[in-house]
Length: 273
Ligand SMILES: C[S@@+](CC[C@H](N)C(=O)[O-])C[C@H]1O[C@@H](n2cnc3c(N)ncnc32)[C@H](O)[C@@H]1O
View 1 (cartoon, helix red, strand yellow):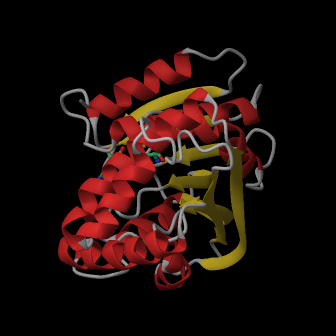
View 2 (tube, helix red, strand yellow):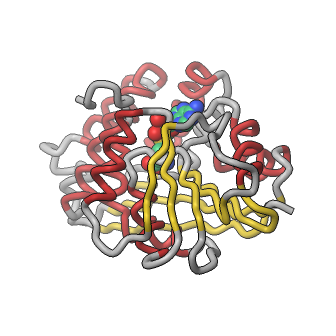
């Protein structure tokens, strides 16, 4: 159960950071930042990226971790407090559509996996553009649900799942691309007046037997996926999915010695001209 005031996805998001931290920190290191940079992380969520940015900037520079949620800001403070050798980190309760910062205040803005939560992504990106200095970077890390977690289960199940995800997305978000912000980020950046630059995809490959954090993440992810798509899967494919994800089933992804998981996320770098 998520803590009160945290969204339903909070547990799996934090577990995602635990499982794929090594690769996600690599994405943070791929953002061009001058020594002593001031960086805004918005929305900061549980603080995973704010800590990674502050570790990268140490001993100079500053990270401002901003979120609308007090509960998430509490988690972010605790996460940052766990680490030594960090650049200064400040926390701000802030609405991404009306950031309480001056124009041109930051060398860079970091925005991870939030453009689904921000239902007016172009307005949010315009606001990020406003607070970054000319020549500064807006770095967006985003996913596409159709490619995010790739498991080597049967092809028939994969095809049915993709179709069911499309239908479930259309029902919940009004669009089959509802859970696919990555394929729309470039357009949004352009609409927000930013100049899209490099795009880089980071992959995390995990073969069986899965380490503890990967397994815990996969369990949460598959449970969420099952809930999301169940009513759109034919009965035989739902049964196949249930077998594939049942740790008690010898053929499940948790027991098969040849199981493999790849997790993909893409970093989009854009500059303010
Ligand atoms: C999916 S989480 C991602 C958080 C973090 N960037 C990460 O990758 O772990 C989305 C975040 O957006 C925040 N949020 C939603 N609406 C917001 C708004 N209008 N302004 C600021 N933060 C907002 C939520 O509180 C949550 O922390």
